[in-house]
Image 1 (cartoon, rainbow, N blue to C red):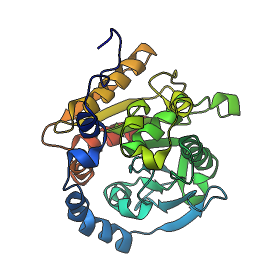
Image 2: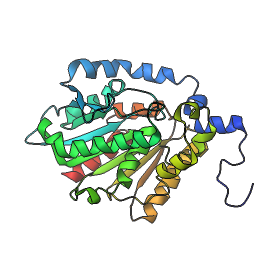
Image 3: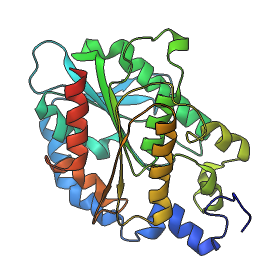
Image 4: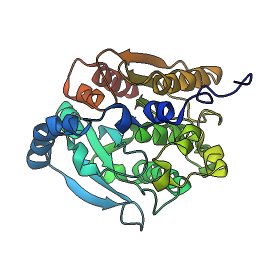
Length: 292
């Protein structure tokens, strides 16, 4: 291997697929979502919800808004960006996040965004930024405080959260507290190794696209508290992405918290939203409290 080559350069195709395709590393991944289905169904059936609120013309540019259960004036807001390797999943499968947060007095926004292959990764990132822009300018109509917005994202959703942090919001005239905190879980921050996985048959990534979307290489513009979380049972090169992104943030003046959760893989790590004392919920509550 040549000096300064990326860590994935010497992997066999089979090893690369294991390291960078989470479904390959956890073949029984579907059972973890099934385990959360009862909590998700309760949230969909029992919580107040403003469903399918559009933030653009594309049919996937929609959010579900779960108002805070109790509030005195405008409530803090939390946005959730789902995973699915930029090409799968839907907001209704993640209502359990609102089930954990809305009862705490946090208006919760579960977002859809454009997906590959109908969109490029550029389009996916653009829709996430559009969603954030819409929330800042519109969430007060739904009882949320636009100056107390936090977000979390898992996997591809963590990358989109990092895209929001890397965007120059001041250039758009949004100079206030656009984001009060971000909790990014099991993220992929440099899309480059994805080009060598089977997933790229749906993503159609090119060198030009990954160069634009590599948030490890672009300076973060939105200074805010950041918590980075990975699962201890994830492949080590996937975990390494979290540490590389943490170093990138630190070099740019951030002080990120970094946590690796023992016993957690890429799919059961979402169960941490269902544990009031879990690291994910602790990080989100801390950022919400700091925004107050």
